[in-house]
Length: 157
Image (cartoon, rainbow, N blue to C red):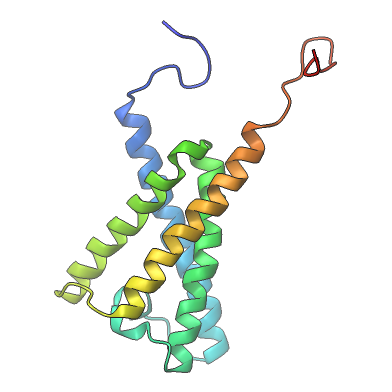
């Protein structure tokens, strides 16, 4: 039996709790960013801004601001990956899981499969951005020198 960080390879409770936590971070971040955008636009907050894929278009000012919130939320989600998942090898899995669940929620909300190019472009781009930034943050944490008991590093042996 191996000892150390996450020596148990298959822990369903840990995985499910991380997915639920990341999904919560995704929607809380998305909601906060959209509230700021709604304040700027002086429009009432609506679930349509999150789940209605037809609102995400580059031809209107509102659509461009919703696209900007997708990018800002990708940055927020990558911070969530850094705090919750803490493993660079799992960032892609969790980023894709977040957006797959979002796809399912959009499908249920609209009663129609999202079929606009801009929705797919933004979501795939945000998966990539979340993954790359999350991996970068996790790798920086993983690559830190491990101090020994006496406080001196012996990495140059």
